[in-house]
Amino acid sequence: MKQEFLNLEIKTNGQKLYELTYKICNWIKENNFNNGIINLSIQHTSASLIIQENADPDVQTDLINYFDKLVPMDDKLYTHTTEGKDDMPAHIKSALTNNQISLSIKNSSLLLGTWQGIYLFEHRINQQNRIVALHYLGD
Amino acid sequence: MKQEFLNLEIKTNGQKLYELTYKICNWIKENNFNNGIINLSIQHTSASLIIQENADPDVQTDLINYFDKLVPMDDKLYTHTTEGKDDMPAHIKSALTNNQISLSIKNSSLLLGTWQGIYLFEHRINQQNRIVALHYLGD
Amino acid sequence: MKQEFLNLEIKTNGQKLYELTYKICNWIKENNFNNGIINLSIQHTSASLIIQENADPDVQTDLINYFDKLVPMDDKLYTHTTEGKDDMPAHIKSALTNNQISLSIKNSSLLLGTWQGIYLFEHRINQQNRIVALHYLGD
Image 1 (cartoon, rainbow over the protein chains, first blue to last red):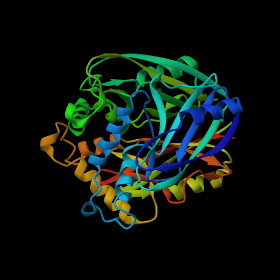
Image 2: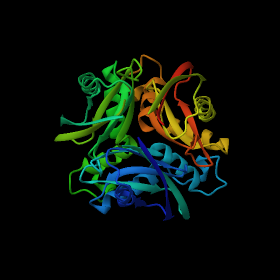
Image 3: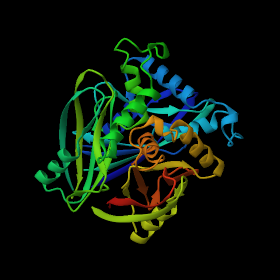
């Protein structure tokens, strides 16, 4: 059994989806991972991890807009407001999506569909330095 | 360490939950898996994976109706509309649920509660051919 | 490869977040786990698992209130009502969050951010006995 770890550092600049797929593919190539699992854990509770369509960028726009309506930035709705009007909505959006994803690797390739990409989904407005912990466990 | 892979192919016929539990149990039996993890990854972004109650079918009806109200099929709400009025809502429902689930296997049995079943949750209206990638890693 | 299993039993007393982090850390210490994955599976479909902020308790209050508004306890909305007005909303909240989380362990420590805690999120009103299955797979 082989295990490797890497911290991906991602600078974000507002509420968008930031693609991680090619970074993970590069890590697989550099280490000659064959068959195994890569566990992704975002080290924050105001951004999340998501697998979404990588074809039409309108999907990402609609997704961001939908979540903004579902979880409004309205201080009257929340008691945790000291860190900014986007902070509590960010925690809720994180709860509605995922902090962690396990990816299967077969013959050195991610088991993803043709139209699937892996993204960091940033829920805060201002610039952030995000860390996604990668952990490979396999042969 | 032992690893095995299998693609489950599921034909879906509208917005319903399609049970996968027995298919996964059969795969465990056929391969004599003892202790390990089965990672399930749906290869699409308009259907998802969900663990839900397997007793009263009303739970599934209520679940489907709830998600339909939460994410309306209303073209005015979205810009990504070319693939049908159910497509963008399907991507959002997928983001609100899960693309991936890791199941623990102990003594050749899934570690599930008595009332838990594993389902593919189809969010598209028309017939679809879905693939769920199964990946066993264990002893 | 080493594998261990443990059932955590948690008595809950209403709709709150119940922290599991220290229980998992203790299990790691007792067993000298070094590098590996701990797979957590809640054995119920009316409570869930969530990684959330562990600093300001207001975050948890806001989270609980938000989910209560998003999924109202209103019998007119559901057909599955025989187990109490909180039962179907609990199944839906479970679908919107997670039944399962995989945690990475590196050098005997959980790969979590400073402000992250692991919680059982109880969605039922009355007292419940909950089981979270822990499964370690690593070296």
